[in-house]
Amino acid sequence: MTSLLLAAALRLLVETELGAFTLELDDARAPVTTRNFLRYVDAGHYDGGSFFRTVRADNQGAARVPIAVIQAGVLAEREPDDFPPIGLERTRDTGLRHVDGALSMARDGPDSATSSFFLCVGDQPELDFGGRRNPDGQGFAAFGRVASGMDVVRRIHAAPADGERLAPSVRIQRVRRVGAPPATQAREDQTSGTA
Image 1: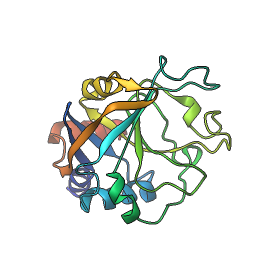
Image 2: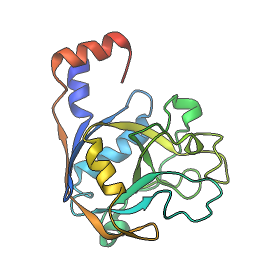
Image 3: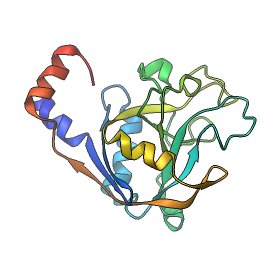
Image 4: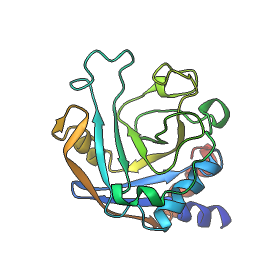
């Protein structure tokens, strides 16, 4: 029963103006990043925020290491209220990978992530530890995945953009915790060892 309650606390519904999708967070393998993200969710910081960036083949130009992601964050006016940056939970240590639908924190240097996050569209191994997308080679902190609604993520990814900037940005109406997956699915996940 405890694992079902934990699963309930770690499922989120993200409602956007282009549709909704569900996230599952992996607190067991990425506790620092998960708890940081939940601070923003529980404080309502993402409500009214937006997906503001789409990175795809047609807008990266001659990128040295191309990727495919959508990036979101809090309203610009709320950024001064961001919590302090967190330590980077490297994929080398967590075992999580930047696969299709992975949820990860955006950052500049190591230990600089605050509120901005991104979702992978397709597998993005260059975002893992040792990947070449970030010059420091430390990668980004994957800490969850899209559990349902990947069609909405792909719709945001394909939305009109001016360069990498979504034009217009896609408004996040609300992000909230939701209940656990059906008991049958939760039991199957526990048996197979998947998150």
